[in-house]
Length: 463
Image (cartoon, rainbow, N blue to C red; front, side, top):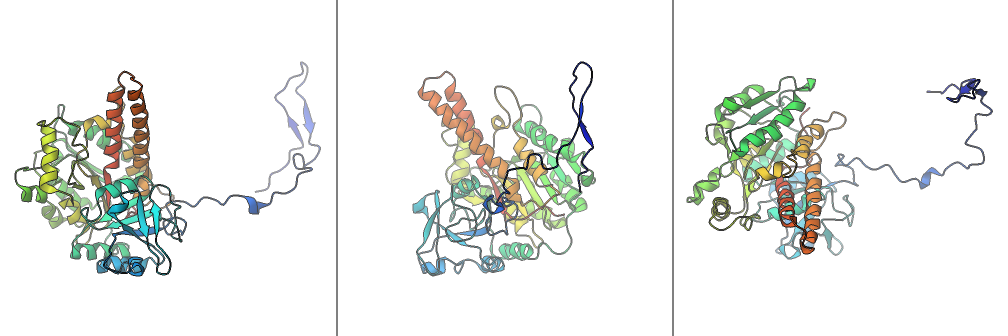
């Protein structure tokens, strides 16, 4: 577009008699005596971090280190299951990173076929796939017994991270679907489904249904592209109605809030088999086999805000939060002892199905009512959760990978960790109330950090 120069300019000034107007003297005003800039000195335009295929962003694979093979072989996925090798081959140039317990959680080791290895800082390494770089998108391939949840928590703070922990058949199903971009019948992006259990009173489900379910529904309800949306709450929040709704609506996005099953504590086998299953309004656990009997996930994305919906760990990070003998202390110790470190059965079933889920986002361990609102002001603190699941995931301008969409949650965790550090300083200075502030901020930070992605972090909501 060419800008037309006006014959004169008028100013919003008054002399007492007139408001002057003046003829433009020259078209080069503001340019005279100045040399043209050398554009080669300008900083390059930042790469959009949603573009995981860009070499300055990149995708990589995280495997356990394996001293039974050569260092050159460790630079490849030679010791990984066949589907993982196929995935790496389909993404040429993507590096393999190795986790070593002796490096703790601050570094991943990167081997090369023709040069010495490097230990890469997970906090500050330059992103990308080139030598000396750590990709922004990372897929952890293995169980939390081989590759602990703690490394995923740490990586979440600076990278976009997912995990695949599936049996041989499930892994093949998932990787084949991923490489084919979920060819075949597609889920309906216009039909998101929300399922929000509410047991009433002071039960945490009421707060979750409002702070997450209602807040998310408010945004979907005015979105014309989500015209076939459906929300199940109150008497409709049953396992049977959820299964029926998924079968009929075939949603591309599902978000659920509920309790997660953590019993029986006296039967380790049953506990592991039922760990984190979503508990409905009638206190019945959602059965994955029943769910999949009438519904194929076909590339949907599921967010489940429930205790242990993603899995459990051998030692609870909240073990010292409650006094011994307290009911929550007993629960935490019982789940750790009975279930140990594992991925939960619901996401394993959905991600390993014949027509699998794209991604499952859930919690390791419980989440608490205290972390959903500010204790001083009562302010609801679920903005980043809702923003990730709607404002980011449903963006139209560019496909948004689920790993990127969740980034705000982990930046929020970092903010609360910083606040916790400040409160610890206040404790040392004997500031009144600082201990409670430190406790609260650390708990919120750990709660957000305990949200994990199961599936490849590069997948996006079906169009």
